[in-house]
Each structure stands twice: as structure tokens, then as C-alpha cells.
Image (cartoon, rainbow, N blue to C red):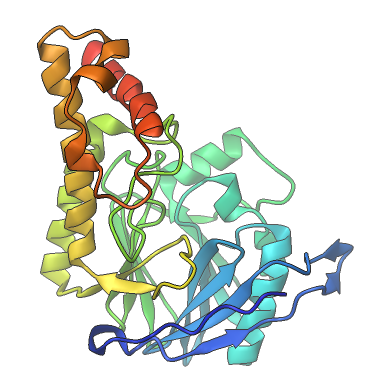
Amino acid sequence: MKALPIPNLTPTNRLCRGILCCAAGLLVAGSVLAADVVTATADLGNGLYLFRYDDQQSIFLVGNDGVIVTDPLSTEAAIAYRDAVTKVTDKPVTALVYSSSFFDRVAGGQIFVEDGIEIVSQANCKSNLEATPRADIVPPERTYTDSTTVSAGDVSLELYYFGQSYGTCLSVLIAQPANIMLVPGLVTPPAARQPADPTLANYYLHNLLPFFVSVEELAAAKGVEQVVGSVAVDGEEPLAPVSLVTEQRVFWDTLLRIVEQEYNKGTPAQAIPRKADMSALSAYSGYDPEQIAIMTRRVYSLYRIGR
């Protein structure tokens, strides 16, 4: 197992107070954790912890009445996840929250399921998972439409839904009392970035900008100052200023406006990457002009046929 580097903390995010490495190579219920998978737990303060498995991350909260875990990731990851939780506390897991219905985020929940545990998601997630069932995914029992709160005594997890964005049921999470926000898959510290999938298969572009505006308004209303990501970036701190939400919105706004302008000029879709000035996107993390060219075709379809 490779060790996860301890972040260099700055005054704005000293709440991230260290890394506790979990075990690998553990045999449980016939599953073996790969020996080269990075697993780690970071204490973000005020009962909030960040669990990492490979390049994926989930948060969990430890309160005086129990533990709230989110997104088990996979059966293999959930084994390490459960071990990480037990290293932090002996309190029982009382709630499991799904932030979406993506298989690579919600599989493995059976590892945490015991009598009395509450499984929570946005209502569309339940519909999605019931329509495409899998043996390694436990469907949620409690659902919400616009917002809800899951509590474990002195800690709580607030869930908000702002419509189709990255998938059809993505929840924006705010952990309390840490008051740290997670926008899974869409906002990843330390910097605004180009998405990894150039086909944008999971993105609902027609609502993406309104979604980001709603998240910004929520953060302002709640006084949120920091965000954490669902994807790990090696060597980087897990927390970033909440202004990263705005910076990521600007990326999408820039890409959409470039394509919209070319569409309105009658530029054929295949010619946009050659004719349009893409220099405004080059400063973003992960910038790849070939992948941007693929994205422009997907965005072009938004203006040609709508959502």
C-alpha cells in the first residue's frame, strides 16, 4: 500500500489535521483489497472526516449519537471504509447517504447495513437504482425532494438538490458544524478544472449554469467558506476556498459561450475547435485541446437540439 502524503496546511485550512492510513490486503467476505491501492482518512475537524480509496473520496461524520457515512464507492472500498471508521470511533453507523446514483459511488453499501441504519438519497436516485438494480447496491429507504438533514446528535449532514446537473439526482452536501461543502464530481480542490470525461455523458448542460448559481447562493446564505472534493489529487490539500465553486462555474460558462457564439455564426460543429479562440480555457487544470474539441461537439448539440 502506498502512503498518502500529509498535506502542507495553510492558515485557511488547518482544520485538516493529519492522515491515518488504513489497512490493505485485507481478506473479508471473499474480497481482497489491492495492495497498491491508496487508502487514508483525514480529520477535517468538528467531527468531519475524509476517506480516500484510490482516487475517490467520501466524507463521514462522527457525532455523539453515531456515524453518518456517505458514498461507499464499491464493496472493496467499503471494507476499507468501515475499517477506517472503526479506527476513528466505536460508535455505530446510523445513516448511509448516497450523493448520487452512480454505480461507482454507491456500490458496497451492504457492508454498512445493520438493523436501524437509515439509507438516504434524493428521490430520483431511488428511482434510478430501482430501475437498474445491482446486487451490490442497497436501495435507499428515505428520500427527499429539495432538501433534508441527516443527524447524529451534535453533527448533521445537509442535503440539497438543484435539479439535473451531474446526473439526475446529485446532492450538494454541507457537513455541520464544520460548515464544509461537497459538490461531488463537479468541484474538486485545489483548482477549477476541465472534466475528465470529454464526452460529458453524465452532464445535463441545459441546467449546469443555474445549478452552479444555486450552489453559490446556498454557500453565501450558509456562510460556507470551504469545499472538499470527491476526487483526490495527489500532493494537494483536500480543502479549498468556497470561491472554487464560482471558478468552476466560469469554466463552464466560458465553454458554453464559445460554442454558442460559433453556433450563432453558423460555424459547423466539426470546425469550431479550429475557428474558435479557446485560449480562455487553457489556464484550467487538466486542459487538453483534443478533449476540449470533443466537448465542443457535445455542447453544440445543446444549442442545436436543446436538452
